[in-house]
Length: 66
Image (cartoon, rainbow, N blue to C red; front, side, top):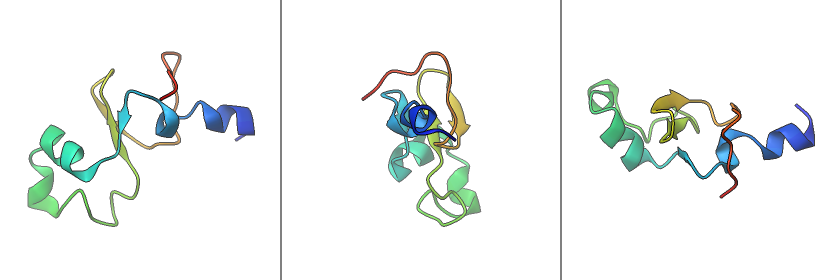
């Protein structure tokens, strides 16, 4: 991934939230599987714009910097 593409990743988008409590609130059943604080989730999060669980390296045309 090029540096320019990396800067436009979900990780730096205003719509992305990787906060464990927000991920658990968005996916209530996740607590049954363990926790959003767990290592399996890594740094995945929620796109509040598209209502999706995704990897922070993802990107889309609606990217907006924080």
